[in-house]
Length: 142
Image (cartoon, one colour):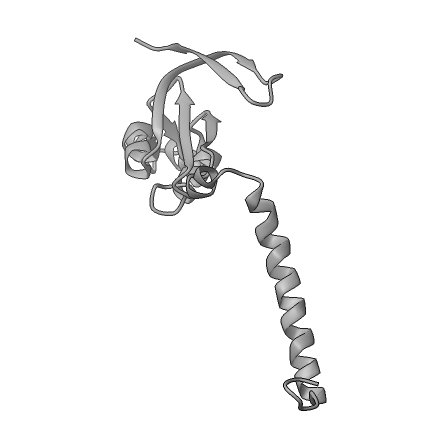
């Protein structure tokens, strides 16, 4: 009975759907309530370090450019060289179809375009034991 009227079976179905939706909604919201309000507004910063500016990382840089990656993700690329050879064009360079500058990808300008920090240097150590603070030691080139 609802206000003196019988509840129809269609109402019961709707009420069941609403209850299921509310359970789903609460299951998603309750975990968020465990964090302070500021944590909900500002997601924690995630840092990605790419070691080496080769062909594979060029594709990663393209995918993680400043316009497509989440705002809380920072990316740093570390490479000893300022340019990387595009591996698909190397055979053409060897057979003199292309010059060396034609097959090279300039890492600095690419990183700048992508909004990624580029450190020209050599990785000399890494510390991955501490889950909260992982570090990469770099010997910077002059």
